[in-house]
Image (tube, rainbow, N blue to C red; front, side, top):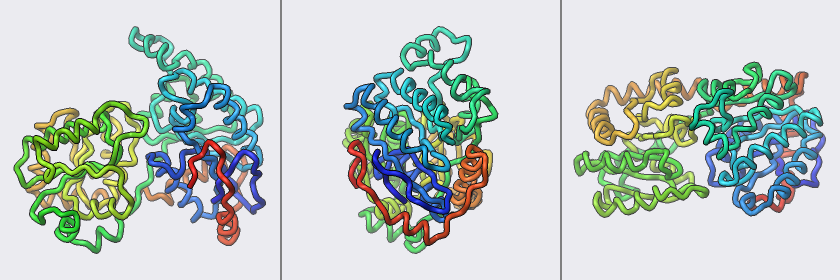
Length: 429
């Protein structure tokens, strides 16, 4: 793939050529999503270029500076068959400066539509656009989160919009977008892709993996993957440990969100005094090799999320493909995922006692564990990254209003070898 700066032009290729607006080479779930998607598209013969987003740099940029940077992206986009924007509000400015990120995002859509640039946008979060008849609380959110931009959603994602599709991970998010003024005909549901379990999980026994991590082979290892943040329910899992016997250990595999400041990571670290450092492991950010080692050592994955507006999570996809059973909270997006293959044991939100009860019951039931793992394997087959990439290709062809020619593998390889200097705002590789 090619990584662009604002002065580059797309290189000749038989096509299709797609420009991706996303975080890249970053500790970010969406960056991981984009990496896996681009990798699958590469395998399918798509020529991919990356226009990297650096959220840290964006925090220090003015409104006008960010607008100029987005205009540079729009200039770059003209030469491509289609562009694919990974949307998260902080990709367009700091959240505390809402409604500026909405203003800048809709300004970019306006520019792209004037240029007739075929555009696909994946919405990774629920929209901050309130309904036509808002309640008092929604009117307060309207002021804080820029809900008054609803009319822009109707204008740039409405019935008259052409050459644009909105992709979401769940039906619930689709309904939220439609309720915010987005034309239903523009919205497609494409679940997050899932990787099959790593080879190390198949080759290593749990006992050997636990030994490498300094754990007793007899312990029951519970693992929570991803950023440590309040909405993911880490403190619920920590409290559940107080209701579990000594043989249970909890591994928190991840560090604090780079833009988060809710104090959850500090609270988890402080809880080790009461629970014990040998029972509550906190890794911080790990490389993929160590991540796979924790997958191999894990007995049960936990996903005690608390955010009912959640539309998806990279952390849950790691758990699904790990070959280990999952206990997750009964929030709408997990309920929707689970309805497809029944691969998770669901529990109530923010109920540590109930979570501990489910953990003990599942740990004592090998048949139920095996059933959940088998169902997860079926889900992985349904939601492979190749299947997701194929659906994205269909979206690119639809917005471009023409079939997209396939590049040969040789063309992809040559093009992928040309890595240009990153834009100043981008994090260096």
